[in-house]
Image (cartoon, rainbow, N blue to C red; front, top):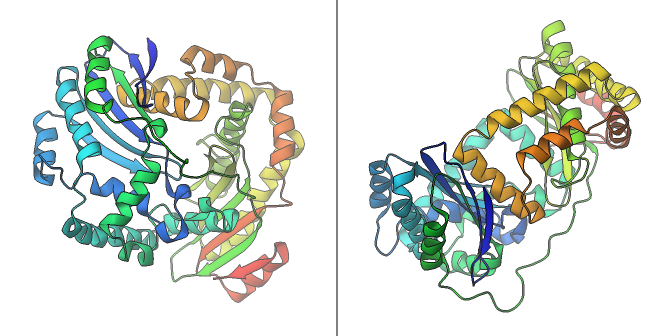
Length: 425
């Protein structure tokens, strides 16, 4: 059963009771991520995520770790380009302790300057890890190419220069600006008593007054860019990203593009996987994925291949994209991918954690809840005509973006230059 309650200060509580499970997951979502940072604040959202686990007025970092372990639970956090999330999953009888712990971290973090200095080194190591992982790095370079100077182009982890200069008052000012009650959603899914939960929420989270004054800022859609960026690096493979226009997370055609992505490269039965890996053995890892934001989106194909096969792999990727733009997909492909989507959706929502995620995303994207039955109905309603129309609109190579990372030769760079305007990093 779904319910939505708004606390007096504006914090939204969205819940779904699942009496058949013995767990409960609580997620605290802040509607602020890396796209909401100023250039000199790059990485602040992610850094704050780290710092809230470093101690409160009544709990040390060690106390926090021991307490969640004693409950037999899981506690973690993650940052995206649009949100920062803190969550805890425990057995249902431990809900009061878990909620008290989560509220203490969120509301009473000390943000000690000595801990900030130590955590800077941790985050800088995290940034270096991305530089050492070519799959992560090429996707980061690709996002920068596609989004150009838009805030969505910035790495979630930030830059070494901005991380190195963080001070306690910088983080407090950022939180004052963005951690506002009306931008916070608490999502709870699992086995719990609704009335008891609402009383605990009012006590722990409902004390602050509603925000006053100006809003923290306005988001604006990114203008997506095509082109080519190549970065030479001594690796065993060349890592490639091919980018196309996508759609926003809440767009009316979202189920259509889910189907298109699934058939293009979103599964082991997809066209790209079968053509490039299974039939020709040109790549071990080949897939496509969607990035949907509140006001824009992208489709990205990733492939890793040996240097001598770069042009051949790109030709095959472009061929499949153009084929989908011209012909859409067959009735059999659409039927198969619908069943795959419904099966994946139902299996993904079997845990209280995944239900919590869905509750929060529904609220942040649309301000309302979409039931599983409604989602199944939307998937069943996708038609071949809709697929063809969306594919013609989005799957065009005219504004395609291409990023390459690895041991690229001068000849390959010249060949890629003839495909699109090229920038060599």
